[in-house]
Amino acid sequence: MNLPTKLTLLRIILIPAFVAVFFIRQIPYNYVISAGIFVLAAFTDFLDGKIARKYNLVTDLGKFLDPIADKVLVASAFIVLLVSSDGDPILPWYASIGVAVILGRELIITCFRSLAAAKGKVIAADMFGKVKTFIQDIAIFVLLCSGSFDYEILTVTGFVIFWASVLATLISGFECILKNKNVLSEEE
Image (tube, rainbow, N blue to C red; front, side, top):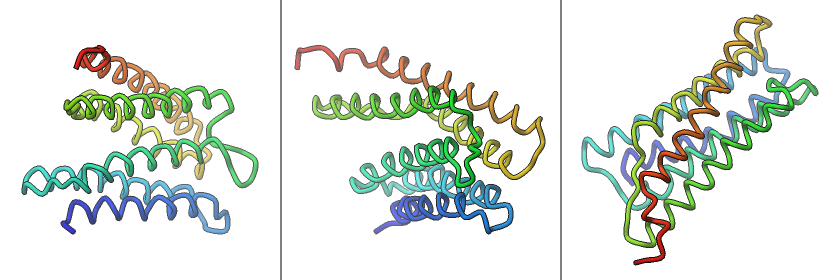
Protein backbone atom coordinates (compact mmCIF):
# COMPACT_ATOMS: atom_id res chain seq x y z
CA MET A 1 0.00 0.00 0.00
CA ASN A 2 1.54 3.30 -1.08
CA LEU A 3 1.66 6.64 0.77
CA PRO A 4 -1.27 8.32 -1.03
CA THR A 5 -3.55 5.38 -0.21
CA LYS A 6 -2.37 5.44 3.41
CA LEU A 7 -3.24 9.15 3.55
CA THR A 8 -6.70 8.38 2.17
CA LEU A 9 -7.15 5.70 4.84
CA LEU A 10 -6.02 8.20 7.47
CA ARG A 11 -8.76 10.57 6.22
CA ILE A 12 -11.32 7.77 6.58
CA ILE A 13 -10.10 7.05 10.13
CA LEU A 14 -10.23 10.75 11.04
CA ILE A 15 -13.93 11.03 10.09
CA PRO A 16 -15.32 9.19 13.16
CA ALA A 17 -12.76 10.99 15.36
CA PHE A 18 -13.97 14.33 13.99
CA VAL A 19 -17.63 13.42 14.63
CA ALA A 20 -16.93 12.04 18.11
CA VAL A 21 -15.01 15.12 19.26
CA PHE A 22 -17.77 17.35 17.86
CA PHE A 23 -20.33 15.68 20.14
CA ILE A 24 -18.25 15.29 23.31
CA ARG A 25 -19.27 18.45 25.13
CA GLN A 26 -16.98 17.64 28.07
CA ILE A 27 -13.98 18.46 25.89
CA PRO A 28 -13.28 22.20 26.16
CA TYR A 29 -13.54 23.85 22.74
CA ASN A 30 -14.71 20.59 21.21
CA TYR A 31 -15.91 22.38 18.06
CA VAL A 32 -12.50 23.99 17.52
CA ILE A 33 -10.72 20.68 18.07
CA SER A 34 -13.11 18.97 15.66
CA ALA A 35 -12.38 21.80 13.20
CA GLY A 36 -8.67 20.99 13.53
CA ILE A 37 -9.31 17.31 12.88
CA PHE A 38 -11.44 18.27 9.88
CA VAL A 39 -8.66 20.50 8.47
CA LEU A 40 -6.14 17.70 8.93
CA ALA A 41 -8.45 15.27 7.12
CA ALA A 42 -9.11 17.77 4.32
CA PHE A 43 -5.37 18.39 3.99
CA THR A 44 -4.77 14.67 3.44
CA ASP A 45 -7.06 14.96 0.40
CA PHE A 46 -4.84 17.65 -1.09
CA LEU A 47 -1.65 15.85 -0.12
CA ASP A 48 -2.54 12.35 -1.34
CA GLY A 49 -3.49 13.61 -4.79
CA LYS A 50 -0.37 15.74 -5.10
CA ILE A 51 1.91 12.85 -4.09
CA ALA A 52 0.09 10.31 -6.27
CA ARG A 53 0.39 12.49 -9.38
CA LYS A 54 3.94 13.71 -8.74
CA TYR A 55 5.40 10.26 -8.09
CA ASN A 56 3.08 8.30 -10.39
CA LEU A 57 1.53 6.40 -7.47
CA VAL A 58 -2.04 6.41 -8.77
CA THR A 59 -3.72 3.07 -8.03
CA ASP A 60 -7.15 1.60 -8.63
CA LEU A 61 -7.65 1.34 -4.86
CA GLY A 62 -6.76 5.01 -4.47
CA LYS A 63 -9.08 6.03 -7.31
CA PHE A 64 -11.86 4.09 -5.58
CA LEU A 65 -11.27 5.20 -1.97
CA ASP A 66 -10.30 8.86 -2.47
CA PRO A 67 -13.63 10.21 -3.76
CA ILE A 68 -15.56 8.14 -1.21
CA ALA A 69 -13.43 9.50 1.63
CA ASP A 70 -13.92 13.06 0.35
CA LYS A 71 -17.69 12.76 0.10
CA VAL A 72 -18.08 11.06 3.48
CA LEU A 73 -15.91 13.71 5.17
CA VAL A 74 -17.87 16.65 3.75
CA ALA A 75 -21.25 14.94 4.23
CA SER A 76 -20.42 14.09 7.85
CA ALA A 77 -19.34 17.65 8.54
CA PHE A 78 -22.46 19.24 7.10
CA ILE A 79 -24.71 16.75 8.87
CA VAL A 80 -23.15 17.36 12.28
CA LEU A 81 -23.48 21.11 11.73
CA LEU A 82 -27.25 20.57 11.46
CA VAL A 83 -27.50 18.65 14.73
CA SER A 84 -26.09 19.15 18.17
CA SER A 85 -25.78 17.23 21.39
CA ASP A 86 -27.16 20.19 23.34
CA GLY A 87 -30.12 20.92 21.04
CA ASP A 88 -28.58 24.09 19.59
CA PRO A 89 -27.19 23.27 16.12
CA ILE A 90 -24.60 25.49 14.49
CA LEU A 91 -26.57 25.68 11.24
CA PRO A 92 -30.23 26.75 11.45
CA TRP A 93 -32.95 24.43 10.12
CA TYR A 94 -33.27 26.27 6.80
CA ALA A 95 -29.61 25.55 6.03
CA SER A 96 -30.70 21.92 5.65
CA ILE A 97 -31.89 22.97 2.17
CA GLY A 98 -28.32 23.97 1.29
CA VAL A 99 -26.93 20.78 2.80
CA ALA A 100 -29.45 18.75 0.76
CA VAL A 101 -28.30 20.57 -2.38
CA ILE A 102 -24.66 19.80 -1.59
CA LEU A 103 -25.30 16.14 -0.80
CA GLY A 104 -27.62 15.76 -3.80
CA ARG A 105 -25.04 17.25 -6.16
CA GLU A 106 -22.36 14.91 -4.83
CA LEU A 107 -24.59 11.88 -5.34
CA ILE A 108 -25.67 12.97 -8.83
CA ILE A 109 -22.12 13.68 -9.99
CA THR A 110 -20.87 10.39 -8.52
CA CYS A 111 -23.58 8.52 -10.46
CA PHE A 112 -22.82 10.61 -13.56
CA ARG A 113 -19.13 9.67 -13.32
CA SER A 114 -20.08 6.01 -12.90
CA LEU A 115 -22.22 6.20 -16.03
CA ALA A 116 -19.32 7.82 -17.89
CA ALA A 117 -16.94 5.12 -16.66
CA ALA A 118 -19.33 2.42 -17.88
CA LYS A 119 -19.06 4.07 -21.31
CA GLY A 120 -15.26 4.15 -21.10
CA LYS A 121 -14.99 7.85 -20.33
CA VAL A 122 -13.21 9.31 -17.32
CA ILE A 123 -14.48 12.60 -15.91
CA ALA A 124 -11.68 14.03 -13.83
CA ALA A 125 -12.21 16.73 -11.25
CA ASP A 126 -11.79 20.13 -12.88
CA MET A 127 -10.61 23.39 -11.37
CA PHE A 128 -14.13 24.60 -10.50
CA GLY A 129 -14.82 21.35 -8.65
CA LYS A 130 -11.64 21.87 -6.65
CA VAL A 131 -12.63 25.47 -5.89
CA LYS A 132 -16.06 24.19 -4.77
CA THR A 133 -14.40 21.75 -2.39
CA PHE A 134 -12.10 24.46 -1.03
CA ILE A 135 -15.05 26.80 -0.36
CA GLN A 136 -16.97 23.96 1.34
CA ASP A 137 -13.95 23.17 3.53
CA ILE A 138 -13.52 26.82 4.54
CA ALA A 139 -17.25 27.08 5.34
CA ILE A 140 -17.12 23.97 7.51
CA PHE A 141 -14.01 25.20 9.34
CA VAL A 142 -15.42 28.67 10.05
CA LEU A 143 -18.80 27.28 11.14
CA LEU A 144 -17.17 24.77 13.46
CA CYS A 145 -15.09 27.51 15.05
CA SER A 146 -18.18 29.71 15.39
CA GLY A 147 -19.73 26.97 17.53
CA SER A 148 -17.05 27.49 20.21
CA PHE A 149 -16.80 31.25 20.13
CA ASP A 150 -19.69 33.64 20.55
CA TYR A 151 -18.56 36.15 17.93
CA GLU A 152 -21.37 37.22 15.64
CA ILE A 153 -18.93 38.16 12.89
CA LEU A 154 -17.59 34.59 12.85
CA THR A 155 -21.10 33.14 12.64
CA VAL A 156 -22.17 35.55 9.88
CA THR A 157 -18.95 34.91 7.95
CA GLY A 158 -19.54 31.17 8.25
CA PHE A 159 -23.11 31.49 6.92
CA VAL A 160 -21.99 33.65 3.98
CA ILE A 161 -19.26 31.17 3.04
CA PHE A 162 -21.71 28.29 3.50
CA TRP A 163 -24.20 29.79 1.04
CA ALA A 164 -21.32 30.60 -1.34
CA SER A 165 -20.36 26.93 -1.15
CA VAL A 166 -23.95 25.94 -2.00
CA LEU A 167 -23.84 28.21 -5.05
CA ALA A 168 -20.42 26.90 -6.09
CA THR A 169 -21.72 23.35 -5.64
CA LEU A 170 -24.66 24.00 -7.96
CA ILE A 171 -22.54 25.73 -10.59
CA SER A 172 -19.85 23.05 -10.58
CA GLY A 173 -22.46 20.30 -10.85
CA PHE A 174 -24.21 21.91 -13.81
CA GLU A 175 -20.86 22.69 -15.42
CA CYS A 176 -19.71 19.06 -15.09
CA ILE A 177 -22.89 17.73 -16.67
CA LEU A 178 -22.98 20.33 -19.45
CA LYS A 179 -19.31 19.80 -20.36
CA ASN A 180 -19.90 16.04 -20.52
CA LYS A 181 -23.49 15.90 -21.75
CA ASN A 182 -22.52 13.32 -24.37
CA VAL A 183 -22.40 10.81 -21.50
CA LEU A 184 -26.20 11.04 -21.37
CA SER A 185 -26.63 10.16 -25.04
CA GLU A 186 -28.04 6.73 -25.84
CA GLU A 187 -25.32 6.07 -28.38
CA GLU A 188 -22.34 3.99 -27.33
